[in-house]
Length: 131
Image 1 (cartoon, rainbow, N blue to C red):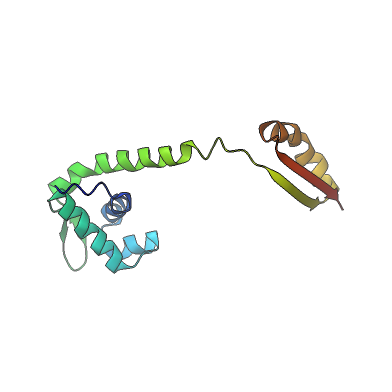
Image 2: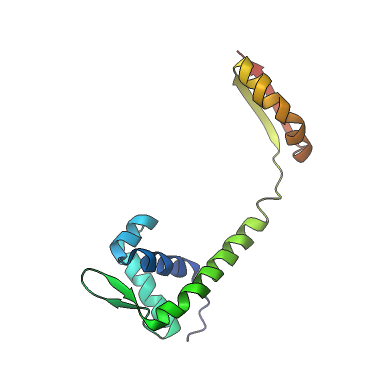
């Protein structure tokens, strides 16, 4: 195995191809061209020094090594997503926001939620006008 590091995009592509059993459909789901999907899979197989799929003209099927990789790939992608989100959730909103809304919406939905919002985001200035 090459020491190039793990390519998370390639793992995501691998998981989607395994799910839909088609490079074309995986690309459509992910918003990627089929050629990009194919290149990423080839690079992943090269990095891991194994074949992950049996390919035919109509369908791709996992090899035994591909089957073995599925749970680890899911775990790696899930962990990476959690790490990425760790620091986003604690960020505070700040700045000025001006909002114009109907009186009923302000009274029934927005005003009751304001104390909690402003407590969590003390640097936020909110200007509400009603119509």
